[in-house]
Image (cartoon, rainbow, N blue to C red; front, side):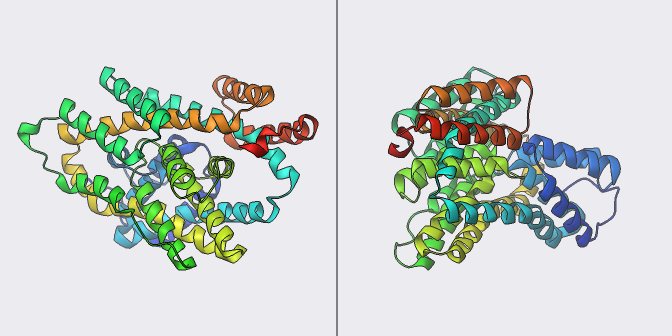
Length: 404
């Protein structure tokens, strides 16, 4: 799967120990986390070569899923084998799961308090700014030519106008990219890759409504679908979840959804850990207990991350051989452009919920300025805007917060 290693096999316990630590301290987003892994595992521990690290990053960028988690699974695989990949990957995820589940329990317990509404009155517009800033960074990394911008614009327009099924937007843009950048005359020799990336999203149809167990099954299937669509960044999950959780199922209202996104952005690890919070909230509301929420967060976490393990262990070996294929690259370029457009479209839709008066507009604009000018960390920005909300909410008494 990788080049001939210059470092021997790493004990699984060492992989687990390293990724547990990284999962606790891993703030800063996927680029920062991957950079930290490269600095520590290549430069300091000498667990793998620069070439192995570069190849792993390139392959993981070609797959849907959270980049940092997938790079961690890749490294664990080439140094710990099949079971090392499972152990290292879940060790990376475990601290995020515990933190976000605890936040979910606190939110459910204290949701009715005015202080909670006040906090998210200030935080919600800052979340919009955080998403826009991250989207800007993604455009600098991956948008190269006119077609990608055209596809992004089309995805944006569709998302805003009709809130179309995000899976279909991704597939459509990917096919356009394949036709434009690819070479159909040479054949598309990695059909198994496409079937996994395209087929998994289409299976999330109907686990029937009914018992609490059926709800857990629906959460699992829904997040399996979501986990296969996070091209480019975990932020791609935002428009997909807004479509499914708010519009289709009604499991969350729009303000609860913004809270879930905020939780994903302030916790360590990937933004897709939002799924853990969503699962807790939905299941706790249905079961009427905090314990029920725990089962929901577990089902959602498995669903959102399981595709990453399967893609690395099954599809990545194929992409190591064929990732330079123009058809593969074309599909990825089109899907990446769709990711940019849908993220921006989601910002417009969510902005209508988060920004409703002069103060929230000022918080959103000020947050953008701070992010571009001083590059503060996500938790620090969220803490500052939470304080603004706590002070301003009882003074302004914004009734629109409870209407939307």
